Structure formats: C-alpha cells, structure tokens
Length: 288
Image (tube, rainbow, N blue to C red; front, side, top):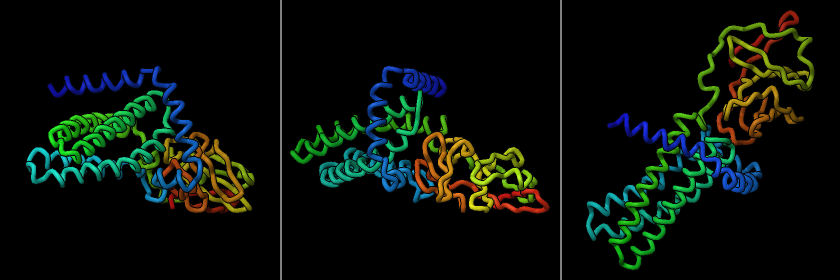
C-alpha cells in the first residue's frame, strides 16, 4: 500500500513537471517576481543571504503551524476554543504573505520541470490561503461549522502542496548547498605556475577533484570554490567586477573573493574559501 501510494504521488508530480501548458503562466509570473526582487536588498532578504541558508523553509513552519493548531482546536476544543482557533487562522494568513514572497523569489530562479512543479506548489498554497481567509471571515460572522470545514479543506490542500515542496527540496535538490559535500584539503597542493595566473582572469583549477576558482586582482591572489553554492553554476565562466566580486553566470549570485561571502542572492550559502601561497614560482592552495 505504501509503495503504491509513493508510485502514484511520484507519477502525479512527474506529470505536473511535463505539463508544458503551465509555461506561459510561469513565464509571466517569473518576470513579475524578478522585477520585484531586482533590488539587491530585497533579493538578499528573501533569499536568506543574511541567514546563511534559504529563508522560505523557515517561514513555512509559521502558517502551517498556525493552521494546524487551529484545526486541532476546532476538532478537540469545542465552542470554547472558537475564538482562539479564529485567531490562529488569522495569524496563519498573516504569516503566509512573507512565506509566499520568499518562496516566489526562490522559484523564479528555477526552470523546466522544476519550475512547473513549483508553480503548482505556489498556486495550491495561494488557494489554501484564500480558503483560510474565507474561513476567518465566516468564523467572525458566527458560522463556525462552515469555517471549520473551509479550514479542513484548506489544510489538506496545504499538505498536498507541502509534498510538492518536499519533492523539490529532497528529490530534486532545489535550494541545497552545492558545496556541502566538497572535501577539505588540509595540505598545500600545487595547482599552477604563478606566471600563468593573469590579472583579472577567472581560472578554474582542480584540487583532489574539487573545482577551485583562482583569481589575481590588483596583484593579489585569492581563491574560492568554483561551483556556485546556489545551483552549481561554474563561477569561472562568470564575471569579475572592480569590487572583487564574482557573479555566477547562471542566476546572478555574487560572491566576495576575500571571504566567499554572499554579496547578492539568490545564493544564501557563502562559497568555501581557499588559502593561496606562491612558493618557487608555483601557486599552492589548501582549504581555509
């Protein structure tokens, strides 16, 4: 039975991912989200660049928790708990707004099947929030039974949407730090001749199968991991600006060469930094 349910769920999700009819809506919404998140301060706030990991998963606990608690009171607390249940529904509605904004920011950086599944995930959550809002309104008007019914249906929709979100995170790896499993290199490793590292050029070298970005700027050598922590983009194919920031060619994440910190999202996890040493005309690196 469990295996049959898993097969049915995976099949349903795969069909959503193949539904190219969703692309027009996704394209339109993506343009709107990207326009809203164009300012760096907004993009970083919603991406979780200040937090060290994505913000959206943290925020999802707030509306889901509030809506679940409201339903628990509805089913076990009787009429005495009606006021508290209504307040919890209200809190869940309020928490849904920033949660949706953070999720939309992350979603706007996806593509293909992932974007289609993410679109359905977001639309399902939006529909659930509308139903919870209707529940809150009818509860205030004294129609407790109708409000409970609306919240139950909405919570079921939210749980279905959460399954889609879990699929994107844990099956497709959306939002997972792409440098998390890179090995640590304790010893100095020879990677290049000093004369080969030209000023202002982005160089990719391999250290025990770990791609490393090596850059000389203003005569100074610095190195960070070459695989973007956000989605695995090749930073060596990106651009270097005068501030000492590297921009990923895939989604525009920016990292500071000095310490690997995130200058601009959608990345939320800093790049691993590497120590650099020049000895006898050779460039040596090791994990910082």
